[in-house]
Amino acid sequence: MVLSARIALVYALLSVVVPARAAIIDLGPSTLDTDTGLEWLDVTESRFLTFTEIVSGVGGFSADGWRHASTVEICDFFISLSGQTFGCPGDLEFSPSLIANAAVALIGDTGIAGQSSVRFSHAFFDSATIGAGLGRIEYHLPDATSFFSVTENLSPKDVPGAHFLVRSVPEPSLAPWLLVAACVARWLTRAEAPVHRGAD
Image: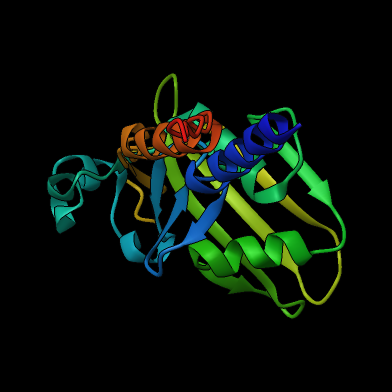
């Protein structure tokens, strides 16, 4: 019984020391998706440049390790942001607008349109085929229908705009945590040494 309690404690410690996964973390000018290990630069950081300019090094993004997100990466990111699966590339329409509102607040908005205060994030990504794709999050204030949209091959590469830029973030090594957990497990599960008394 004592051994079972100790093993349960080891599992509890492992759940604490092993880093949690599948989180979206706001880093200020960028967002970390711990599920994919990708850091996403806010779209406001790359406005007014063309796809070709970004790729050729204008703005210094390439030198800092940033590249355009792929179709699969932008789809996975939008699914993580929305918490909903949808046929991507494609559109996800939903109401209320709280999810889209939070997503735009996280990655930055690139504009506002019309009397209805439609706020949006429009940015280019690297389509799997030809041309630049366009990823879009749009929401209507305060509570109308909103949507996430991923469209491939919508725009030529010489149109200025914002960009979905990503870079890989190495996953922290679990080795130190596993070593700590193993030491704790050994300490918790070791048998107590019998006490020997000398002859009287």
